[in-house]
Amino acid sequence: MRILIIKTSSLGDVIHTLPALTDAGLQIPDIQFDWVLEPAFSEIPTFHPLVKNIILSPMRYFRRNFFQSFKNNELKNFYQNLRKNNYDIIIDAQGLIKSGLLTMLADGKVKCGYDRRSAWEPLACLAYNKSFNVNPLLHAITRIRKLFAYSLQYPDPSDTRTPNYNINNHVLSMCKINSPQTNSNVVVFLHGTTRDDKRWPIKNWIKLKELFLNKNKYKILLPWGNESEKRDAVNIAAESNNNFIQVLPKSSIGELAKILATSKLNIAVDTGLGHLSAALNQPTISLYGPTDPRLIGTIGENQIHIKSDSQLMTDISPEKIMNESLNFLE
Image 1 (cartoon, rainbow, N blue to C red):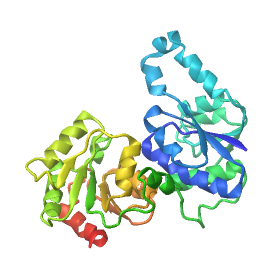
Image 2: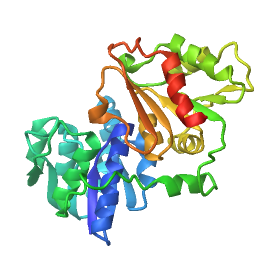
Image 3: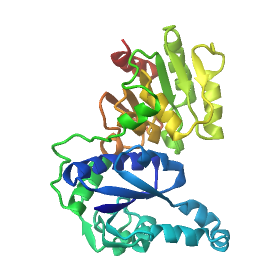
Image 4: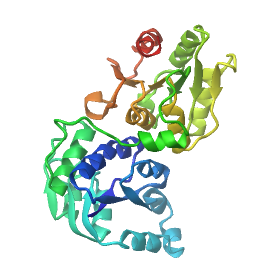
């Protein structure tokens, strides 16, 4: 059985989809998936053994450069790739107008998605010939697992089986090791996020850095994804012994996955890399302000959520995070 998944972004949303593929593979032995998504996130599906092909959908680029894309045949080539195969079932796991449009354009016998009461943008339902009601107040991972179960007609496992992202073996094989290096002294600060209101103040990251460096046995790594995040990383690392803290070079998702898979602890704001850490079952402390961890929080082994009472997250103290960190470190 060949299935096409429409889930174009973002990093966290793509990671949330992985357990549903694992569920389906346990129920339908011959199943395989192709996946339509933005180029920035295209590495993640390749970590899962049931994903066979990636169809790149640079929708953001097309919107900004429509006439150039049309003139250069980029739109035509994308359309041909989208319709290259006739799928048994197409599942729109996003529930947006843009994902509904892609579902409509793709070639498949059955097109499935959320119904108008549970899709984020109800007009997306016009693209489906089968739609399903899935409570929007459930966690995003649970919603997607239910949608796949209903679409592919197997028993819903989301209430009885914990999510299995099924990416550890692939990522650890990239690291050329068989299990995480639990004796690692590395702590990763995942300080970057796409929304300003999800940021934890830089002064708090600096104070947390000092608490770790006072232990004289942990090395802090600071990844970044854009120039603003790089400036923040440099500010956090400033005036510190370089033997104990490092601003990483700009890294691919695959490179960061290897780092997260072998660290001792990852500390994150609400960001896709926090979900990647959780998918790898790595010890992770995640900080939440305006977003609700009950709906989009990290799920995996060794997860701690700290929810702020303030939209600005100013009431989450570095000392509290350090105390929680000791549960994993010592």
